[in-house]
Figure 1 (cartoon, rainbow, N blue to C red):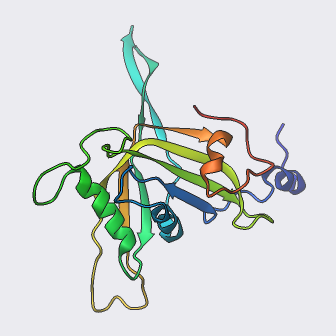
Figure 2: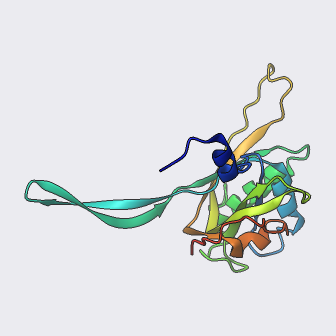
Figure 3: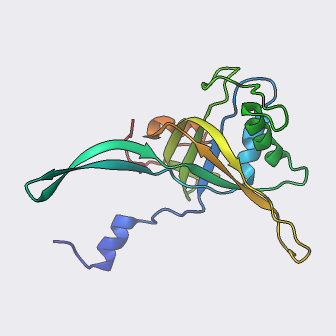
Length: 205
């Protein structure tokens, strides 16, 4: 029987997890137009992101006046992150460059025309980690999600207005991906942060 004891609740939830403790690691497609420090830039300027979700489809089969439900195929939601615009608009330029390499604005060409992660491909893996506020600088990693075969499909507009005072411009980027995996095996990609001692060992592969 569940207890309503406050002490038991605190010992179970501990400090919980804080949604402002996270890290993103955005790998860009291979090739000369993207550099390693681009990943650091996107990590620092990422204002918000999300741990990915998935949906299991349902097959409804009618049987003698009832509907029998059977598990169907899994689908994955799009993944969206919001970024601050830096003074040089470098971070926005990175995502516009990536999207333009898939299909150019004027020429309707595809510099990166292969749907893979090779030097000619336009896909890359993304990592998003939930961090724990502890004694480690930047926090320890509780769980890391690896989004496989990603590519951006939307770089949002930035609204401009004379009355937009005391603000920093921001924009969102939306990615498509094929599937995600999660667990301690991906945690090494979270900026080299150590894995939390209390991190779950339940991997999703």
